[in-house]
Image 1 (cartoon, rainbow, N blue to C red):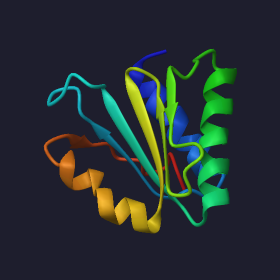
Image 2: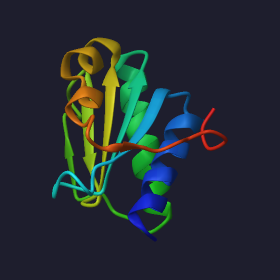
Image 3: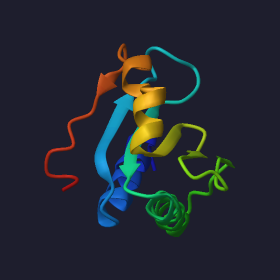
Image 4: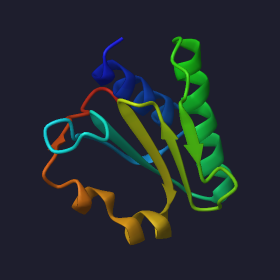
Length: 117
């Protein structure tokens, strides 16, 4: 499975659990960190954890294991590192504070029309 397919699968998992403002940014041309950055917002700490759990579950079903998880005990931001794809799930306040869209503005936004609700 390509890193693009992994990012799309993560976005679909987030959408299936009602993640908000889901975005994928292709950062392969501007960073060596990963190929794609997936970003979503949850409405509460419980929702943030449920979103992260769903991504981990769906990708695991596809045979893709998470390399590293940060912030699971946090109430505001969970990061799932899949090497080529990094998934960030925030609450509203943390997403505004860290503003990853601004940080990765040199990356290419992926059109998710028809992929997520």
